[in-house]
Amino acid sequence: MATHSVKFMAGILCALGINGISGSALANESIESISNTVLPSQSSEALAVTLDLGWDSQYISQGRNNLQDGGIYWLNTAVQFGNLTTYALVGRGDSQAYTEWNIGLEYGFNIAENLEANLGYQRIEGYSNSRCQDNELFAELAYTAEAWLIPSMSYVYSTEAAGYFVEVSLHSYWNVTEQLSLTPYITQGFDFKYRTEEHDGRNNLQFGLEANYQLSSYMNVSGHISHSIAQGDIEQEATANGDISSQDETYAGIHFAMTF
Image (cartoon, rainbow, N blue to C red):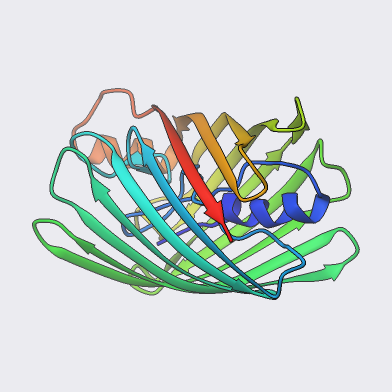
């Protein structure tokens, strides 16, 4: 299950002509977190290939820690031809046996001036003590008139859960130098039978800071620190499981990417 709001914002940044974070949310049966998996930028080249290697201190999606121990490594290969992008993403736990594959296809287009959209599909396969799989359909919409305040909305539907997850976000992009950019963000998540069946509505409020340093026109290093505040869906799930501890999560990540 996956949301792609951050990955979508990477394309927006390129359209705006600024050096911003390129990222993607990642998942075990779902994808959300700001794990910064870089997709190819919108360039003048007809074909672009991006390789991205990253690590997150925890595997957080929809405000939940998906692994009992440690963090997760990510390797992504994405090929962009015009408005069409296909990608293969693999994640491996750094402290426990877990492997996940995400293979997807997405199409980006302009609805109107400063209004960008993205539609896509992805297949997810996870391997640990047992195997899990899912098919997801996702869509994103963003208004890009001002780089300092870009509102966006993302939607993902899981065929396995027969539910959907919605995120409403605000990103603010700032160039500190020609190479360095900082992006504070805030995201409100809503769950509708996506992670749990018992509660619909507010899931988590997440905010953080992303940073991107352009090493060259083809290489960049990016990182983030993020904090997720548990809300109704997560809290009710924890209560049902007898867990009275705080469900808030703080995590960080770093990525290195090459586009050619």
